[in-house]
Image (cartoon, rainbow, N blue to C red):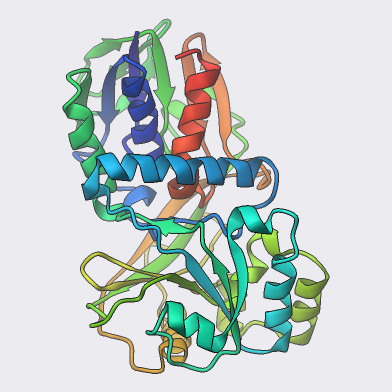
Length: 373
């Protein structure tokens, strides 16, 4: 079978991976010379901890298994089973963390409530003031800026994978063929469109009423910290945004303490992970109303700097980069992904909504199984 995959973000790349693994030939088409969208602008976190139960958690846990196996074969991916700590600074925040450990699926997530000393034993860089932390053993990380490139290099070794960058697919021609902006027509047995947040043009023509929206976020990266940050780190504001933490304890926390005005205005949480070079990737914000601004706003970075410095108990290293990214999210946020047949032999897979890096291996596996690859 010949599979055409359009889009070289993490979701498209993992669809190509599963096709090649099952013995098929793949033509991978990307409008940029290399992936440039949300997949290279995120935290690189394999983030099991906050996922909703049921299908979402099952997808994340399966993806975590697949990421670890892929990481063993592709060292350049930078897979690290580092876990995460979500810190609590008062009794109300601690109560949310403690309630999470009583979930029926807490053991599957690797949840454990730690006091401050136990958390610092896991992550000695956290020298600031906090009272407890929720440990999630199943969380992990990869290197997002190089992950797609490392996977592509491994795919090329198969002899069944061809890369075609700098080509934008403009049209689906008849059945199972696409035309690119150079006028070339590419024929296959199956076409998988993984176009990420690019929801106009061809995608709109194929599916005018796509139930997917675009979300913009801001992030930053620092110079090397100078010491290991041995886990990913989140603050208690993240409890407000992840479905695993909903319940009476979260309601009580929300009633007892507001977010800061900046955090509330930008729908913020702290997520932080250390990169292979020692720098810290820090974020993030959420913006839903389009059209998005073309610039980044400074207030969120100031807020995040203060939160991180309070947890580290030291000044933040100099910020090296600031950026914005846009990803696609199902308008029904309980859905893991939007998978739809656009034409005979042509499928669109998009909208994992901030779960792309976490869940892509399992999402692509589900596509492969459903299509009988």
